[in-house]
Length: 164
Image 1 (cartoon, rainbow, N blue to C red):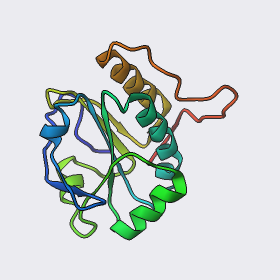
Image 2: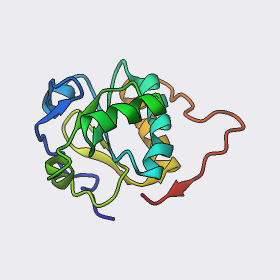
Image 3: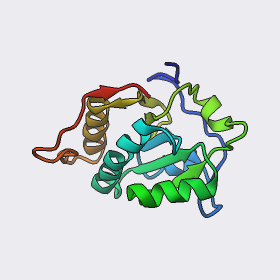
């Protein structure tokens, strides 16, 4: 499963969000680390992953930026966000040519990148990985000198990994 690996500089490819506003990775990194989570609405592993990413967003929204990057149309993406309770900003890749997904070397979704304020990919995760999400949570907390909050609830049955 290919994707840009940790240690690679993250491409700053122009994107627009659901409201049509332009997004710049360079600008977002001025706030702190950025998590980019690429997805397709029909992907069952994406459907499983995104509610946990919402928890990551709620834990770190004051000092990091968590973003979805949809490979679907705006209308289909809006339905997905409503259905799964996703409130973090979501960007739209072109569903015909996937310029941003291609720039990041995607072959599978979900693919999630943690990008440092310096623009380097610190964690590159393909599919669902509980360990990778916990690592992102830990690193985001460290970046703000906070203690990592728990992403998983006591008694919750969370699988360790699943291919995208």
